[in-house]
Image (cartoon, rainbow, N blue to C red; front, side):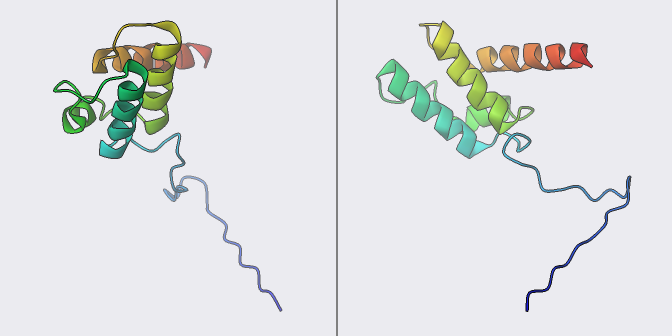
Amino acid sequence: MTETFTTDVAEGSGAEPEPGAAARPADIFTCREVIRIISGVERRPPGERLDEYYWAELLAGCTESEVLEATWEHYRRQSRPIWPADILGWVAARRADSDADR
């Protein structure tokens, strides 16, 4: 016999579901993935400018999905190297568009 348990969460109770990949904050592992992408696209070994701790500190206000989407979007449209400022600019523009749509 299988038992099924359900719970009801009252609105405004503060109980939130675990964040999905889209809401997870960018961290050191996200930045390592970005650096791996950069190294593959630019076909060069990671250099001095690609310190994941530095990138993680700069991109701390972004989500994992925003950082990865911004990275791929940059390389779809640009041939120059990507910098943290490119990602931050993309995220700010995307959030402004999202706020304008509300």
